[in-house]
Amino acid sequence: MHDFKYKNNHLYCEQVKVEDLAVKYGTPLYVYSHHTLIDHYIKLRKAFVQVFPLICYSVKANSNLAILKALVKRGAGLDIVSGGELFRALKAGCPPGKIVYASVGKTDKEIEDAIKAGILFFNVESLPEMENINRIAKKLNKVTNVAIRLNPDVEPKTHKFITTGKITNKFGIDLKSAYNILIYHSNFSNLKICGLHIHIGSQITEGSSFVAAIKKVITFINELKKEEISIQYLNIGGGLGIIYDNETPQTAFAYAKKILPLFKKTGLKVIMEPGRFIVGNAGILVVNVLYIKSTPKKKFIIVDGGMNDLIRPALYGAYHKILPLRANGDKKQALEKADVVGPICESADFFAKEREMPAVKEGDYLAVMSAGAYGFSMSSNYNSRRRAEEVMVSSAKAFVIRKRESYGDLVRNEAIPAFLLDL
Image (cartoon, rainbow, N blue to C red; front, side):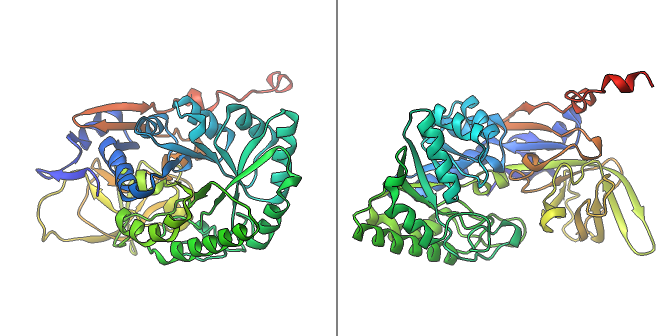
């Protein structure tokens, strides 16, 4: 569920008319509902209340400081994957003891900064990384916590680009290698191996893959107990899917009902890393119709937002509903197939192809729905386009949480060498 609804044929975000925001702040414009964001976080927390999980929101889904602050204020931890995300997490006031750090390619500087900050633990993705964290911790005269990210070799039903739990993926450590690491944990004098971590992919709408992966981990934990090796944390990652089109993803409570019985008896502290589930349907991208172009073969609705603003359709062929900010109220209105495309000089620059659309005209506004996750966070300045403005709505008020970039921002860190200036 979300808080983007039609009232008197106008699309609203909570109590604010979205068209008023588009007129005031310009487009492309990201609009987020604070209520939807917090509601989805609370739903997950309530569903798993029996085990009191630490819910570490996945920063990569949407890293705006206001989004992070809103969740941290409600007790969330943060799941980070870079030094920049560590900076954001601390800037948003997240206690370091609620930060977990993944990524297959952590640099020495990133590792050192995280150890100094006192994060809860690293999710370690390989033996060389583990050896490196141990070396850096020793240099700093620290003992730091790590969790081993297991690769359970489970294939979820999702796009191949966002599958992470197969043995052919770059993520995690296979069970046999992880077992050997734990058996010889004394080799890592400056590490405390305190947890196990899995994350099998993103936008997973069925529970069977999660169940299969968690069952493998619990069998693994039982093997460790035979060797008198104990851990404290079980991090079950994220990956819960949302509704973009006609998906029927499991609710938080349905998900909990399936997996709670599996790990409840372990007595381990549970960590979760949801991203899309919390923020995906809490945001939309608003664009303006520039031109209607008809050819002998197609109709194109050309808008002022492009793949640099929202790359998911180009990258994954992802589906996003597209709604007019003004509906005409006629349920029997004729629909016409059209491609909704942007201004970028790429054929992959589209939001929809062959989509049944109501009649729109130049100057109209459209909402690209379910754009809160992996929208702005994956945006770029391709074609030297300024990145969008971001607004958060709370009840009847709207707040700018990121200003639109200026043209000066595009070249702020660039320099022309002196030898070119005298040409």
